Image 1: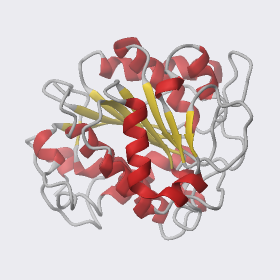
Image 2: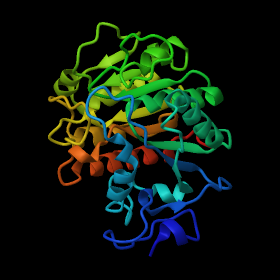
Image 3: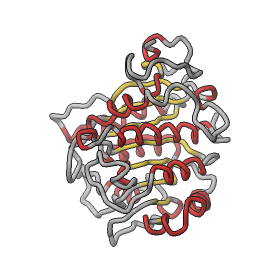
Length: 311
């Protein structure tokens, strides 16, 4: 019981009752000790950059709770247990001063840089999608400009003035600042109009439905190649029937199966960082959005474990 507290080994998967016990992501040990750690999971409960319904500050907690349903065995189809390959801890949440919003981006970046500079991979749980910008900046400090693999209903490339904190403009800034390389990046599942693509390659929602999972995987791998890449998944990439618990739902999205199979098809990419954002449990039904978020975040860990370039 309570492996989040009492786990003696960072590797391995051990079952405990899903309905009880201390909550951490996938029952991993809560720790700030990065010695011997391959991946740290951290939450960033920030949601004041949202343009519609707030509430994603409760996303990390809800995703952790839903993950207890997944923490008893390895994922099907992968052929290995990611937790036998990776020493993973739950690092807890980023602490920021909500009363000084101008300081939040720098605080998030510093929080993530502290982990990344120790050669530890990072899985971040949001929070609204703005958090990806300072997280990306922390990764780019170490790895240089990155290829972005971005799953979303929205492009988040709306043009904006410098210094604004908005969950719809951060990839405009990331492209402008050279944090990501748009020509070797891809956005998947978009189904809202934005004239400014900022040079990103786009596989929009209708394209995904028309061409299917295999074609999506082939295009993503062709675009990013062997580049170091960062994967960000906004839960509203899923259709609202699969993920109602989010701030800005848009119909016509991916199914959970499509998303899962696409992620599994990305095995072997040079993934250096990842996040799952925009889960807002107050609008959820039966915690299905939180479960989808936890499940897709877990798939990302398996992708990370499959990276042949990983140390």
